[in-house]
Length: 232
Length: 218
Image (cartoon, rainbow over all chains, first blue to last red):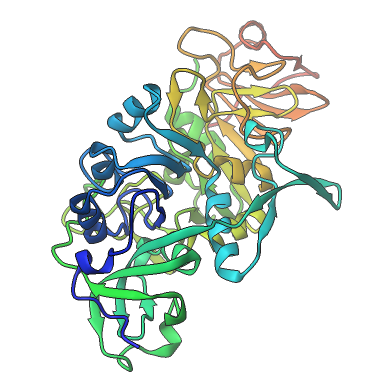
């Protein structure tokens, strides 16, 4: 069993026109920078991308939008991207906006082998249109299905050759959930170590969920809103 | 005098109780963290996966892996913890978060809230707002009383697409503090110097005024 790939180009092989891809990250925090760059170079199109956000104009998923690689975007918040808005208003891009907790839990359900979940988020709103509603203990819940995605692409802080992953700070966000949800999961890590070097107690994502892993390079880790305080 | 946004935040902060787990939305709600009363310890939840959110970092200490739900660089505090987005909304749905403070474009007299979409104009998405309002035990809305056109944001029915139904418990605007009950905006406090007539004139939904209405003490 070899899960280790040499670089992003090798790791994204098999992603083709029309694939459905889960992409980890919150804003630009914890996004798989290397794989996005490799996909842009590969130039696949008609993709369905599931990610909390859609990047900014010139970074993250924004780079894929610029190249018109995305047919459909499923996200919870897409506010920081002018090109995204242009394509949406021109009808070039299909968009499904879903509550953030629903997005996370539909990933979790896929990784837990559950076909669907019930959530109160969106009851009484347009999100509920056409969805089955069940009442439990006097409160209404929407039935939401587990995602069915061809690939999941995630970014972790450390990983080992078995595919075990550890995330850092709030760069964890959707990454462990999406890692569980892909039919093929690709993980890029800042540090790749031999099996045995990571403490099994500290693993966030067990390697069983990860099919391909590689050491990423030249992380930019762009900050969207740099905020500081002047005095202690 | 109507309140400014800092005073709105300050009034809301007076409602914080020691030991509360609190989720603060973007905008005025974020400012609430600056006015937590002395002796009150609250733990701030950031829905991108952090409990125990600290202040902005000092210049040079920014960590790109450590942001809040508004994508701003932040810090941790002693006792902070990180978790994934499913657990984050899990603790929200399970009612573990004591108070949610968020902004709104419109609130109805039954506590419906609209804050995520203006059809044909703004399509940014709901983020975590629908999950928060569907589950939070106690929701305070912090917002201006009227929209930029001068129209009331406290309405009989929301006109914009809803974020949640019958969920808002309290509202603090620059003019007053309201509780939602009996299908109306129950006036609890006025901003210093603001008359009941002015509040009436700017509240389109059913306003309920019972007895003497005290001024806020800020």
